[in-house]
Length: 75
Image 1 (spheres, helix red, strand yellow):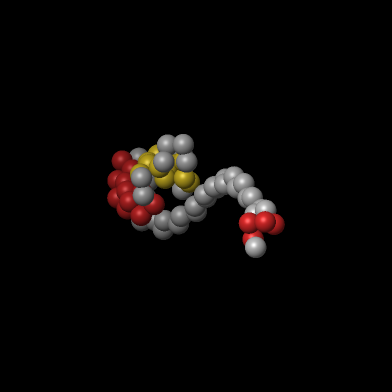
Image 2 (cartoon, rainbow, N blue to C red; image 1 turned 90 degrees about the vertical axis):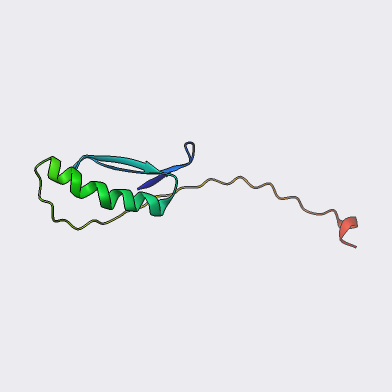
């Protein structure tokens, strides 16, 4: 599961199931995965009992410009 900053959504992709889902919230995406995974496994003739594990990645880049107060402003 990863965060798409440009689209503003969490997304999950798994080629083994196959699965590709997205949602605006992390928790909602987990619920969608819990619902969709057994259905997709059954439709594809794969075992329906499985353990789901989640690996998440989120990378934020923040640019900061700090200004130092002038000496005359501190007194």
